[in-house]
Length: 365
Ligand SMILES: *Cc1c(COP(=O)(O)O)cnc(C)c1O
Image 1 (tube, protein in one colour):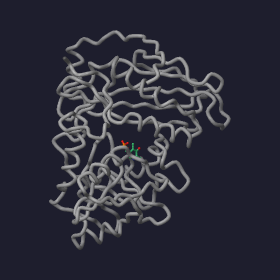
Image 2 (cartoon, protein in one colour):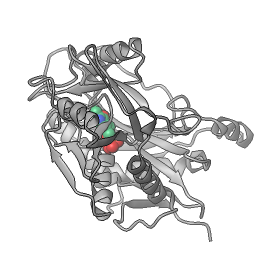
Image 3 (cartoon, helix red, strand yellow):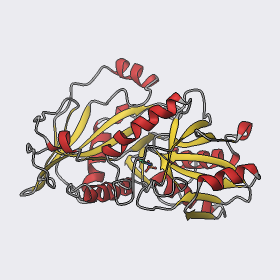
Image 4 (cartoon, rainbow, N blue to C red):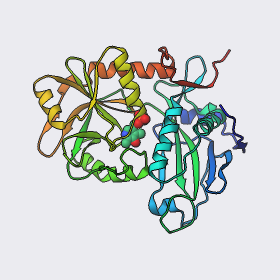
């Protein structure tokens, strides 16, 4: 790995007891570590001024383009503390590559992949004491990029900032993994053909919030989006990819059609399922097919997946016209066994045979 040079400005350390108290029950996205990474880009000078500095507010001109035209992209990955004391992340180079694909779509600059990975290393190393060790706990890392030039004209970024912040996270499901109910959004979409659906950008999330409210009003925790052209072809949830499981062990998942995000969890689960001898069909999957399959017993499980929740079993799909319900058969067996295998690889309980882990802090001697 090319070593880029980062300047380090250490934060005043928090007393250990105070930190331990925060780490006991960190929740998700509420607390942040003591440092952050910032790297500046300008069209003339490229990437420069890489820093690890105390976590805190960033100065921003009210005319910053991100505030007006939404030029923002992000990533999400986790650092895990393992039983042997080592700290690892999962496939960070895949996040780097995806950030650059999002950057291209939003006319932001690409960042060298090894600089992205080094930025993650610098932050996790500085805040290593903040990586929790409890069951299902991790340090959630949020790299992001914004266009921050002061200019109200609309154009490709001339100045940008890449940052990484970190947030200790507890189990996504307090009280065990429970099947969720999801709401079929029939009037509102998060993405359309040729839009930004395949980019991990804040704007897609903004578009998903009103449908998310509609889901909540109908007693559902998540939203399922379908292709706007057919209103039947499944895209994904607001922030998770989707799988169906057939009784013969085949997994079905929507193919990357330009509307959906190329999830690293999705990709990893496809690999793990194939390793076990399951066939995986990446193709157009429809709500009608799901409904008919549950009715005739040929579709027996459904789950959503993403870094934050790993795998979320789906118990029910609700819409204004019908409900698809797995009843007490959810969570499904394959759903839970794939979940156990993937988290086992991440936490060291299982062998990392695909070399997915990136060791940041070595095991204690
Ligand atoms: C981040 C994200 C996912 C999941 O991707 P992972 O790499 O598995 O975390 C799925 N869908 C959307 C819209 C996302 O933003």
